[in-house]
Length: 290
Ligand SMILES: Nc1ncnc2c1ncn2[C@@H]1O[C@H](COP(=O)(O)OP(=O)(O)OP(=O)(O)O)[C@@H](O)[C@H]1O
Ligand SMILES: [Mg+2]
Image 1: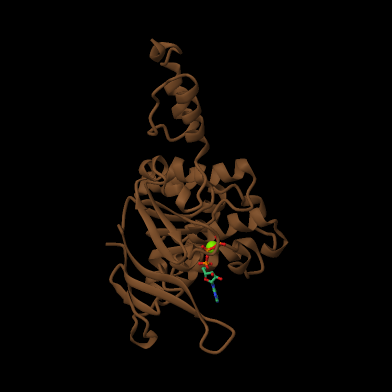
Image 2: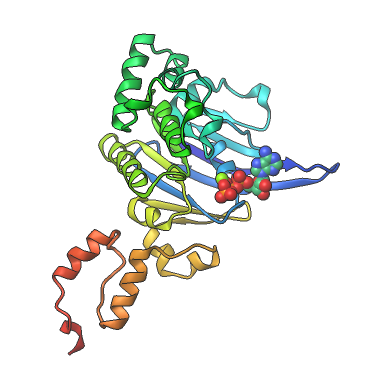
């Protein structure tokens, strides 16, 4: 098992004495080390980022335990194993990338984590340049990370994680702040990494089109609890998505419309617009009207 939550709660102290907010309640969740592409979705404030921060020990549970590979994290910090090895294996791209950048140049920033995890300077530089090419940000390598746009910062933060090649990638809204083409490019890169290396990816997003296109499993959060964990077709063909304030992916809106208007019978296993267009090529309108 890659990551496993057992009856985890996480609460934050409020400003007033004895006031506490529950950000996670009774979370049990098993994530395989390999071959999962999980979308974590849910309305704002539902606990998604807090959940991800438990997956590489940024937060400790206030009740229950989280196992990350062989490391068991419990509410007692002193009894917990060292987190460096865990963090090398589970990379986290933050929701706000500006929190993650701090070096003088983009190149140094991307090299920081690999060096910290034991790569030589030479290896780290080679890796940094390789991922900068992959993300098309080679032209930024000598700039200060603080003089970049939000979308460029996000790409640099992503490069800093890919450079040390963790086994599991945690992505907190990875396409936020990117233009549509940039968002598509980034998603295709993650998808390629997932397909070619079998790395498990856990991605928070508010974009249900991305969820439908890429995820192999969806975890829905609502008011600090997991309210659904499973297949995307089932999620969007039942009322569960509505009950959790989620939008319907556009491709499904289109399938619903075509099925109703033209009396067709297209199923929800067409995950992208391209799938749907291919399917439509084989359908003669009127076929199902007889
Ligand atoms: N450091 C903190 N101190 C106190 N409360 C916090 C802290 N971080 C999060 N919370 C609270 O915990 C709850 C869950 O927050 P979290 O950031 O996990 O939500 P989210 O689902 O990621 O939301 P969004 O979609 O807006 O990013 C919220 O009510 C939030 O106010
Ligand atoms: Mg969040």
